[in-house]
Amino acid sequence: MPYILEHLTSLRQEITDLRNMNELSALKSADSQIDQSAVEMRANRLAEIKKELSQMLNRPEDPRVWWEKGGRRNRVA
Image (cartoon, rainbow, N blue to C red):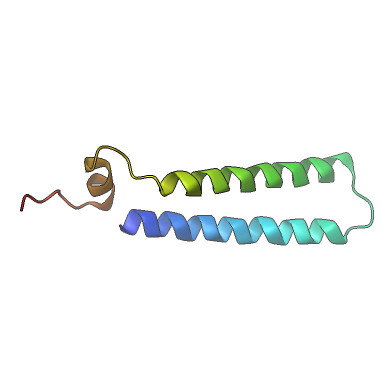
């Protein structure tokens, strides 16, 4: 579980950073090709994050994946 929380926190921070950079870019009066390319790269990264988050909602078929990443062992009841 700590792995997932750390990863979500990291993604949240990255989203905030990308949005802030996009806002600063929007305030510029003239966009160069480099600026436009940077905007497109940030938009692509935001789309990748969205896809990654949607994949996190789907539990893997193998429950060991969830336990191993969290450092916990699967218990037998």
